[in-house]
Figure 1 (spheres, one colour):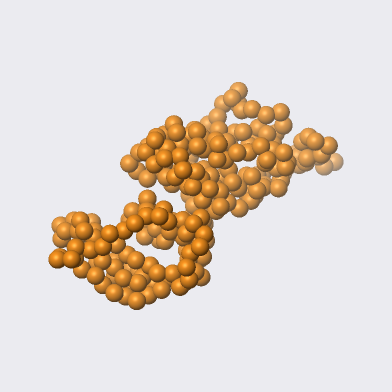
Figure 2 (cartoon, one colour):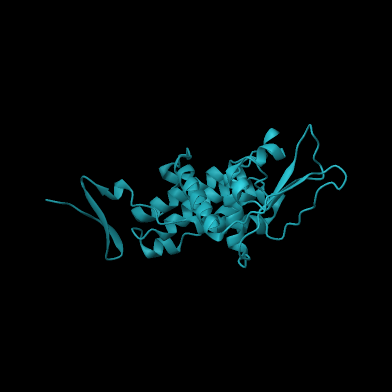
Length: 249
């Protein structure tokens, strides 16, 4: 649409301030404009995982673009030599700016992750001997069920992998959970299963799913202790290999 035209793109602050050049692609037509923005970093990328997170962060700031383009090995073609247009801007994208965009993207994912309507898991299906085990198992089943229900053609499956991996990765870092419970949490194995169920792996391949899950886990930070762990009736604490309730008298 109009947001793919050079005129529109050249007025986007991130592009105007940091892009090296912009050009119309081979399939561009005036009726269906298509363009590509090229950012040149001020230092080379040497870590493929960081590159993918950087690319996702830039795309999150330009959400109408092709969000599937994040593979470091992706090759791009140039413009039509007869009818194409190139605009040279000469900007550089500093790693300081990239880090800021990655942090913004992580914050947006965190907000989106917390705002989702999650499926209800019947108590009879929740596994675990202790409250901590049951809490984590409930969260795990919710993420798998939610991710499995994402549909093709909306971008939900790709973004869903990031969100679910962020949630489980956050739980794995939360020290208010016992170490053994956190060690038994396997975001990759659990979410790969859901990615098979919703068709993501069949379309994009298992390696792409693994990378996306790894990127979601990389965004994770420890989750705050839930209010139920510190209720007015007393606080549950981990003692002697089990959860016990400490009551104030």
